[in-house]
Length: 272
Image (cartoon, rainbow, N blue to C red; front, side, top):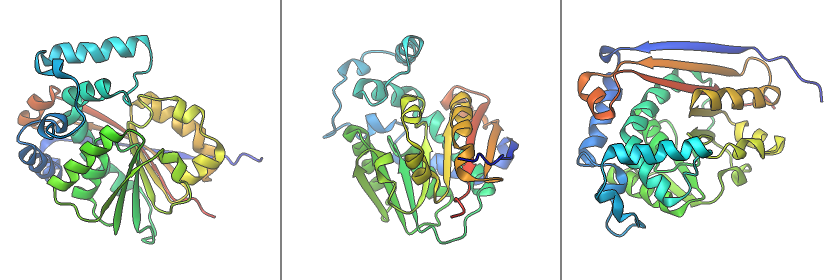
């Protein structure tokens, strides 16, 4: 196979509090709906929560649990306990990151208007898809996919609380849906399972990228994914985005960070 050289455009944004009107409105709306709680706490009744010790420990201990696992190996967020800890520690920070990421994605991606469905691969609690719905609602249908049923339950409850009607939830491996047409988004898809990228065949990646794709993740994972897809999408189809964001004091306090770095790939639909 002949490898076509690919020019990757890098976009760097800086957002100050005054630049974040719609993002702050969306953040506050979800915060109000959840009554200042994370999804796993707010929707606890009747859902598969089995980590009673979370009620007895502080946030610092939960964060230390996550750090200790990361030092040993790539943490498996498919494990319920790990997902619960991650949600407790980082939901609001990652939701804010996803809001910023969706803004960057909307500015960078070139869509023809024919992509009527958005598919969230490995949706988890639905954070990225919810951000896309609140800021960039241009699709007829949202399809949220995760192979972990517990996480899908939280995503469903969250979308119901926001009263999103045009959404479908599928309990499946996201990469098995390569035949479905639609723009793909993925948030922190690789952070807990880098084998998802390593083991993905070119056919799977082509299906993932065919109708356009937006991926938000840690910088090293975004770079690794970028190097894998260069030969698949064709020239001038990828933008590597970095957003340095300074949230207002109220949000900086809630997410325990005065500066948030967001890393994203915006990939145009493949030219068949």
